[in-house]
Amino acid sequence: MNIIKVKDQAEGGKKAFELIQSAMKERNAKVLGLATGSSPITMYEEMVKSDVDFSDMVAINLDEYVGLSETDSQSYRVFMNENLFNKKPFKNSYVPNGMAKNAEEECERYDSIIEENPIDLQILGIGTNGHIGFNEPGTPFDSLTRKVDLVESTIESNKRFFEKKEDVPTQAYSMGIGSIMKAKEIVLVAYGESKVNALKGMIEGEMTEDCPASALQKHPNVTVIADEAALAGLSSL
Image: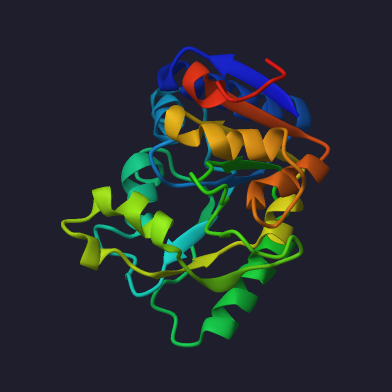
């Protein structure tokens, strides 16, 4: 893994956007896998204020809460629209349908989208328990898109976005680890001391389903962008 140490999240957003630009210019990247949450926000800010045209690009998001419509203020579709898509249109932008009536059909539909639009560069965050997307500990490394139950630590982490904990969805549709691993390049962003153990497990720990992100050890092209606080647990730095 290539590790880029940054002073703060603002610098991290700039570095992540530089990697996207390089992939577009040097490798003709056309499909971006995108993430939600607080970690990639500064990257989206850099994308929005740039003069880069994304109108020939395809975006495929990692996940969406089950039970939230695409117009719900807490949905990841609204998050992406407000932070990126409304300001920088893409040719196509895909987010799982949180209101799908048939979970199996929705997962098959989303896997088909990924197959038809192979991801050139995938952006990831990482949960405090090592999850990527909503692939919680115990997720098989070959998993594809599926409906998942969120563990208590994830619900606890996400409650800051909702009025009260009871409002936080307990299930989500998520690309699987196998889906993520198909991307040609992966860029993972992480900031703050709460991510210390997760990053240490991902980078220096054994490859185990107990730390879903450790699967990235098998990927040939992963870049980690993180600040000093998040990297503090690594013995190799």
